[in-house]
Image (cartoon, rainbow, N blue to C red; front, side):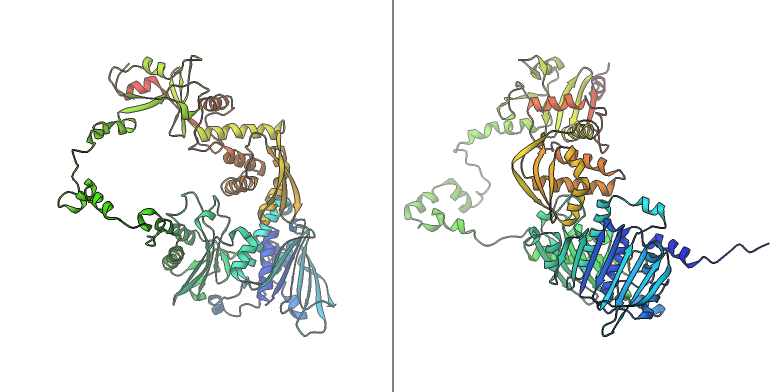
Length: 632
């Protein structure tokens, strides 16, 4: 029987390996930027065309390579980072496996120009599908320039799997930010389609954070720094007001390597537990310096998942460092023993205490209760104690055996409604309650708002309890869905257009959704340099702070992007519905509540919100009778 096991050719083996290492253009960006850092570069340029599908080029002023190294770097498992097995436990460089360049060369056309410092000429290497097409001397600047062209040209299925240009560009920006944040002492720039998105000069970590995330963070960062014999923790966390609904601005670096760790993230969340909302995520950029012997980074090809030899100790150090910084900068609650200057200006403090005032104060019952023995808890019966006779009235509306409703017309606002209190009595009947629940002007049952969150409305078989936010979310979702499929929504033009300045990643996201946003009523126009002009908003959205509205919309969109596997358009309309829905806690007039009820039951799926949450619960009279043990 003939042998059936064969050794794969290098180009096929490299393509298989590339499936693990190079998943999209952003993967190549990460590997090439880290190689430039390892080469000792101080200035690194990233050039992108067509979201990396046409070109990804990294130019650095690092050490460069010799003619032999320029050819060898594209071989599998060829690396200058480690020499023996022991080196795996002392890794201080970004890369070490020697797979990245071989994987890139297997799925793209690569051109390399490099020259060592002090060398007269450099080397030029051209590789196509793992085969060397050309190698010759060339004239080039000191350092290395490597260009990856036509990614996945030889793997059509992988190329077709790539997302839209805007989506792929967002991933590229994310990888660029992570590397640039790791090394603030280096200069980075990012140019996409001949437009410069980033130019980051050398500086401090805080300067790099502000340059990337925005100037509004400049005064909202709290320094973190803890030094121990085992590890060092340093960086910055955001003040509570910077917390968002998504995890976007959260960065952990171990020995300058970006990592993803839900365990360490939990430590930071615990430190913020009492000072931000339960659904909020704090901003943090934290660096951990630890001996490489205590860390295993050889867990995943992306090297973003690592293992610590003592995770509990790391958790405790990180949580303690963040808590200490928040307390040190008076972010957490503390006792303030300093007297408020405004108190010192009061007459009781600034003016002298006369003899007559002293005499009058000593005759008061309050003075006696504090100065005489056993008088602190005594009540003076001679005072206006008659006011205490009706103390129970204060609690009637909140007691368990009573309830409150209102009688008002549809035109009355909540502030003018006369409140009527009913006490629970055995002889109370539904007909009595119906009369009080009825609009005398229109002879209609008027809905009632409960706790500014739910709407109570009668139906023939009993009543329904509606979640006002979930119901309005369903209404808006179907309205936006119709706008995308049928008639675009009307736009309310702004009297004074506003300029919207966004971080580069968010600007790429808006560019991706621009067409759909315009269909949904937003009049947005790109203005260059991550800036947009807002000339109008959907007609059913109240005009206000367009910057905050669109930022909240983007946060909702990114939140759905993490949770849902649906297309961009679906994510957008769900995000807009969630962002613009009436929130819990908003007081509604009778007409507003009735409109919500009417529009909800005109929806194709009135019983659930877009995310699957129930919009209402119905209660039948027969069920209520059983609950009150009345029988049939």
